[in-house]
Length: 306
Ligand code: CP
Image 1 (spheres, protein in one colour):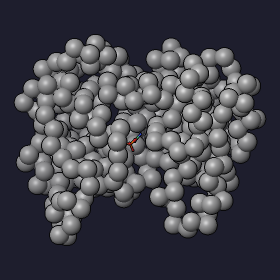
Image 2 (spheres, helix red, strand yellow; image 1 turned 90 degrees about the vertical axis):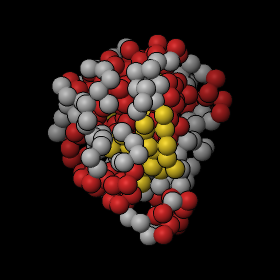
Image 3 (spheres, protein in one colour; image 1 turned 180 degrees about the horizontal axis):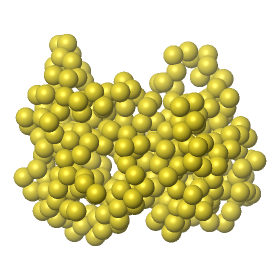
């Protein structure tokens, strides 16, 4: 298994054995996340975020600092030379002179793959349009494993915007490497993309539903996503699906006692605040898990751990 120097563009580029190994390394990073380490001293991470982010950018930066490395970067394109017309390929060929690894978020699908073609240093996809968000999928798997003690054998529901949601695309591909039953719950308009569905249906049992009430009593993990207003070209379409799901205490009366509720965040109104106080809510634990997972990925890619 080789990780040093590797790009992380799509979760599909990884085997189950590789993912299981990454999960092991993340677990080993828990202690270092508290004590700190000099494992990546002298190494520089560049975070190039052409699209809004709180968790992905800051958790990558936090992970790098916790391992003794440093960070440079930007959080919006308008303060960079992209504003003057510089393209992504040139931006990458410049920044690779300043850093050892690049974490990139970009609104265009295919952007991370394109960046990797031009870069001599590893590129980590921090979200490529509505396409994929592979490091989120890895931290989601880690959260499921930590909370449930296993991934195999679980019934998992992905709820909300399955059409434009990059986190659920990557997570679906990742879960298809495990023995799970996947419920895809969305309005008709936001059903899972055909290319994702076709790939995962060959490997695992998949059930598509519109009503969350039908699946709730059967599931072990409920993964809720935001309906992403910013991805709709037509606001009339957004109006039809806005607020389609809201997880509240009333709904949870029919859930398993040990149901785990996850959300990649940010949330708007799809999980009621009162759910935060229940033992089901694990979305803020996901945030911590994002730091340890990104520590693991940086350490592996920069060759500091094997
Ligand atoms: N989960 C996630 O990608 O959050 P951000 O958009 O804040 O990075």
